[in-house]
Image (cartoon, rainbow, N blue to C red):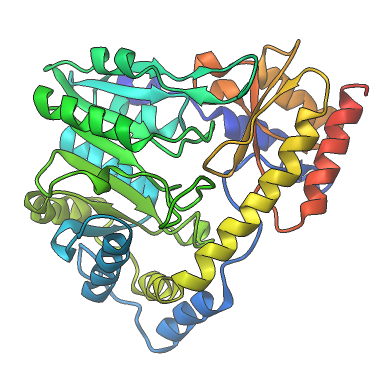
Amino acid sequence: MRPAILQLEASLIREVANAGLGRPDVLAFWFGESDEVTPAAVRQAAIDSIAQGETFYAHNLGLPELRQAVADYTSALHRPVGPERVAITSGGVNALMLAIQALVEPGDDVVAVTPVWPNLLAQPLIMGGVVRTVALKPTLSGEGAGLWQLDLPELLAAITPTTRLLIVNAPNNPTGWTLSQAEQEAILQHCRRTGTWILADEVYERLYYGESPKQCAPSFLDLAEPEDRLVVVHSFSKSFLMTGWRLGWLVMPPSMLDPMGKLIEFNTSCASVFTQRAALAALQQVGDITPRVVSHLKACRDRLVPQLQALPGVQVAAAPGGMYAFFKLAGHDDSLAVAKRLVREAGLGLAPGNAFAPQADGWLRWCFASKDLERLDQGVARLKQWLGL
């Protein structure tokens, strides 16, 4: 196999999860998904589609009616977007890989903001890109301790005319850090000057707990012109409770659409019709589904974080976005070893911080998307007992 593939690091999150799979006593908070099933009406739309025999190939770019619905949904939140800028993909991961396949050649300079979901660093390496990282920095004391922040001048200095692509995920997995509109404006203007593409992973934009009249995080789509070198990735997974459906979408310049259709053909051919019917149903009920999901996730965050803050040696803040509590455990600097011990000794499944960046070693990620708030309480009790408190 190609050396670039052989040298890829296996997921440390999966390594921890594999240590606990098959153990019914483990409280698993390691993966980034809710334990609540997809809403019934969305599932029924897929069932109806299958019953009607919609088991054939679809258009490479997705059903026209779904592309229009995604465009309408996006336009209601941001600047107007037409279906000529939208492609439906077989999951958000697939959308990210398609974008990187389209933009990154061997030797290209790629800058990524970390800590970040490890797939976003692996994908450009698969294409032969050279990845450089700019790390967010945690506030370690005083007001806001546990929050992560961007050193904007450092990031802008790292992006030069030789930088092909900037990868940024905000709201961020794992830290919950969210870009401000002013920061996005500065980044967009700088990348226009350097000719750098921006790949914005905004799959968590609706999982936002700050002040926003549209109930979403700031987006590059609030600022960009249609032909800007910007590709935005979204997914039905998080805010529609559809992780297992594997359906996402891309928003891109109109000139990319036809070539992207060819690229989709050579990757997956198309997304399945019945999952797209489910997505249409989800968008038709977005006013009911997503606000309820976000309200519940905020309740989960506000239930978990104060309990963690009350534990001696734990540093954590209520992040403005995402579905994670990212916390530092004093005296436990090897995240992977600690996460494995917690599974083995406490029956508690968390993701190790060093899965997301070396700078996050000593931190742990807790996905708080639990339909049962008492399950979060049980997890804290296990952590407290393991710490000997």
